[in-house]
Length: 160
Image 1 (cartoon, one colour):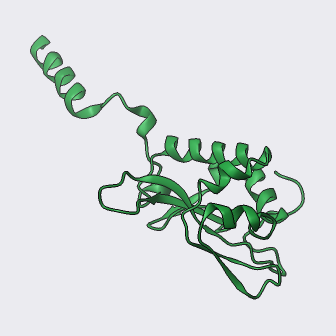
Image 2: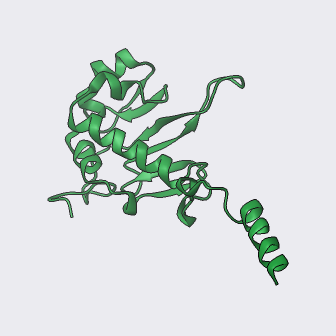
C-alpha cells in the first residue's frame, strides 16, 4: 500500500501540479495566449495609467499603427507612433473610453483568438511582436472610440 501511495504522489508531482497556480487560464481566455494573472496585471496597469493620466506611458502600450475615429466620428484616423498618439490623445482616449476602462473588472473581460476585450470590444489587447526575433509583448491593438447612440461598447453612468 505504501508503494501505491508513493507512486501516486510521484505521479501527482510530475503530472498533476507544476507549482504554477498563477498560470491558470479561464475557459473564456483559452484562445488568447494569456493566463489569468497576465490579464489581471495588464488590466491593473492600464487602469492605473489611465486614471493617473500617464499619457506617455499609455502611448508605449499601443501597437502602432492603430486606427481610431476622428473628432467628427466619421473619419478614420491612423495613429502611427507615440508622438501622434500624444498629439491626438483626447480624440483617441475619449471620456467614454476612459470611463469604460476605469470601470473594467477582470470578471467582465472576454477573449478570442484576437486577444482580450474590455466592455464588449471598447478596447482590445493582445500579445504582439514586430519581427520573428522580437519577444512577445502585450499591447493595445484596438480602441473603438466611435460614439454610438445606444452606448454600445461603453459603460455609462456609475460603475457597478
